[in-house]
Image 1 (tube, rainbow, N blue to C red):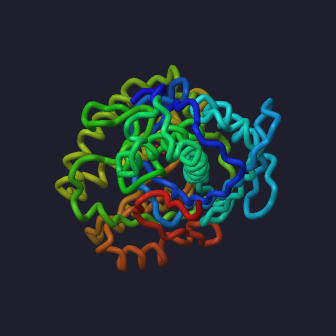
Image 2 (cartoon, rainbow, N blue to C red):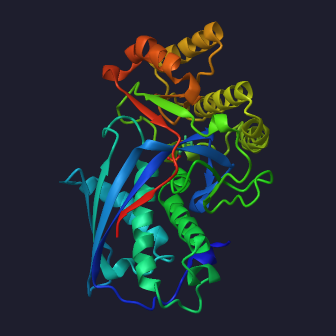
Length: 376
Ligand code: PMV
């Protein structure tokens, strides 16, 4: 697949108006994406668990307009108009217009809400951008349905799984142009993004389902997200990614991500929990080490992040349970563990770790299976 495969012209159908709702989850990377090239192409491959409970629900209403000089849209979060969200969506529309040439022909109303609290320090960009990309894909689907243009790939000619595959790939491709990691939120349960030799079918352009055998223990993995700091990050991901250009350790780090994906294959197949823990914790700390070694340098972890990590290590040593952590680009801690150890580990989280959370807040989540069309 190349970028050209996502351009379908012309659309045979016309649509006056419509309304579509999708819900799309967040995801948490095990091997981290940090550093990107032009057009949201990742410097290294990544793999993530799709989450189940942390999601964005977006309704896109559209009506035809005559004046096609500008994009026209309004954005609402929890029913409240959000003009400060507009620049990001304007940039997104500019980037994807070549792939969705109908964008200037409609006035859009984007109504969105998250299942996780606003300002929880959980980035809504992955779930938000993927939900919007899916809504736009549903519009395109209606514009081409029934009569399929000769330029369309074969997979658009039937309603079987292969057409779903094209739909999902293009949705992921578009979501990536909104926010890199959003391309891993369309499907579940494990998604790879970024070309790497060890994963067949992997692409820099979109996320793909992890294609190899996964041991049962990884099929219902749990993620309890400890909300350590709900404030806005001092350094955005965009700035952080850019600081990987000319970074002293960049080359080795990018190679390490390829190597870790290769190692993870054996771990995921065999159910090697100790190997899994060592690999994902190292990935989380390497991500933050890259931030600390950037110029300018920065730290997104907070004292309570470290407190939690130390308590997790101590508890794991004392009990032999398979509790582990990973981190996003922020202070919050994702506590990961197998389902069959839930009761002891949740007990520990409630008794020992919740005190380190801002206002005692945490979110109980687990591995999920991707986005869902709610209404078309
Ligand atoms: O998608 P972005 O540009 O917000 O970058 C996210 C990067 C990390 O969350 C830190 C890692 C990842 O792979 O999700």
